[in-house]
Image 1 (cartoon, rainbow, N blue to C red):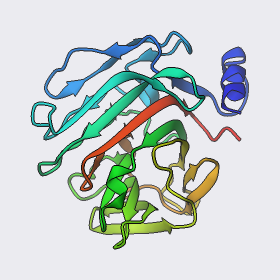
Image 2 (cartoon, rainbow, N blue to C red):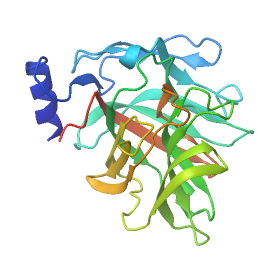
Image 3 (cartoon, rainbow, N blue to C red):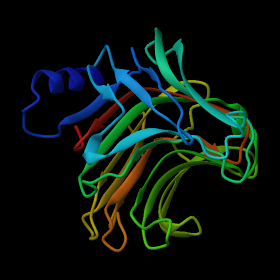
Length: 269
């Protein structure tokens, strides 16, 4: 299905319906020069033809952002060659967090978005290690976006989590909040298993709205983790930046791999 949708979008770019904005499996691209904690991914993907850095929705820049990284010893990211979700060798974005300071993390940030009220759909393949999941009462996240003003207390954040309960069993958590201690809505899902040491497909869709027609959807391997209807902003703020991928949490060490990213301007059913 993914390849068929991608081929259709590339062959008919002017067709009605959702448009493919970006696609890459990290083929033929590389990391650039680190500057002030930001490491860009650069180059033209030899398989899809799309270029890095990602500049969707009028974003001015995008890069991996190393925060409290201890000279890339606590957390690191790089492009590696691995066996992918198809069973063939491919290139993927690998991230690891070995230990944490206060806020150690390494998100790929899409920054200074100008068109922050647009519908957006993001999907990619991801593999998570099993080492961090046996730890009780812990958490990790790999995707989030924030509206303008979130850091000052008057914005909104949409974030995905994997929590572990007191027995160390992992489950999904989907949340929109005003700050980390003030959820506006929360969805727990213990019915869909959390894949460990294997590739799985994750999909995120949102319809930005300050009203009841807003929507925030998260699916894993086609199964719905959470589908929230209602406001997807706060104080009418547009999206400011997207953490397309993220490695962050208190369960360490942890590792992950990301491949075959697609970004659309609507939900490609």
